[in-house]
Length: 572
Ligand code: COA
Image 1 (cartoon, rainbow, N blue to C red):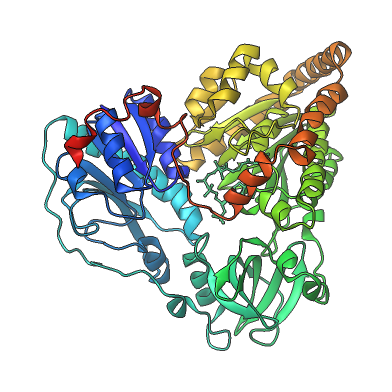
Image 2 (tube, rainbow, N blue to C red):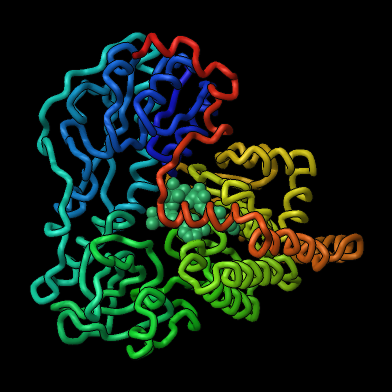
């Protein structure tokens, strides 16, 4: 089928559907929902069999849905309606939730139902549920809906259901009462508003939106008071315990700025808070908030790094590098780089860079810190390393993964192995060495220039990933553990390590790693300090969530075909 994805933005769910439906043999094009006329024009030029809307914030024009099947992906069970479905589900602590694919009609989410599915809720942030359970369910539900549409079936009439219309949530309804709410309630409120819009609150006399809440196990204090800081996060006492808050979005004169680590947002004010010990130095730790965590089994070390949104600031890279060095000193054979549950890595921390006094200097420091980490992984001659991608990776995060000896991915992972979407950023992380070595120079160039997301299966066909497994996380963990165990076995470990050392020595002789790095950084220096401000403009727009003004050509394939004006009048 010819499927037009109409989206507010090309977000993780839209990207996942894009790669999955392409794999199913459908022909896809993407249009951003910018203006009704633009939507009509896209429909007229692409002439899709169906319009699919996985992530929309406005209604589809009537002249489009009246003539073309338009399928809406709603993150709620049949009968649930409204723009804050998951927020309400978290606040009401429901046990199961769902995804419904329904046909667009005049009233929001009220059309007949093509398909639906259910999933078990997890105590997690809204954004995490969206990236995992909702996305997995949506892929299957959209597949079912398309199969029924292709078979000439009709959608079922929608019934009101148990939930019905649930309105958008106002900040007053989200507000935390620090004197009355217990820790579970505070976390529920934070989770229901994360990653957007956050919970508005006042800290040390200033207004912020709060994100990234975690339960603290030991600390306590006077309800509502700030009692500690650790790395970027601050700890606030509740009625019966305490929570860590990792991210704050300053609100000034009623206007929201952008998110950043809490300690960065509070600046000097945070420095007066007592510093809480760093648990990540220990082994087998997890005390409420541990971005970096290490565990060990059967001569295999598992290094977890669960950074918010997969973004890695200079300080986070340095801490991870120190943790990696500690892992290397253990009497193990394999180090598995686990990343986080939602993301493996998205490269440099663009929000921290934006918040810095000099964005150019901060970019330079951040890329060097991530390069140092990549170099340590690449030059590890004591262990074999595995990058285990439980979640998505993008830009520098993908190439950091390629520094490992083996790359394994969950089947649902979407990779964006390119930098150019960020204002023509050249990129570093030794990509000029790692990418061609894995997939060849020609394919490397095409991948970088294509700027498209790819799925785990396509990444494996390309040679970017060595194996993938899913759909449930248990299957992926089983793959990781069995591949690690095979490599750790006496004979294969000695052989593989010897081969790795020989390969690295040979490559170093032909072209030293330091040369790759300095050539890449020369280009990055131009991106950061040169005359062309594209990277700074793109980063500003990305961090400030500036709305798109047009659909990039690499996504709007109907525009590449040059058919923009064909038959547009038919949809007016
Ligand atoms: N630095 C800081 N924040 C980042 C980030 C990064 N490198 N990558 C993603 N994020 C944040 C986004 O700002 C967004 O923040 P929010 O919580 O305020 O909404 C959040 O992660 C989710 O990002 P979004 O783009 O909405 O998610 P997605 O899953 O739909 O798309 C990506 C994922 C990775 C394709 C997209 O975020 C991206 O292109 N990131 C930038 C990658 C990059 O250029 N890195 C720097 C070069 S090494």
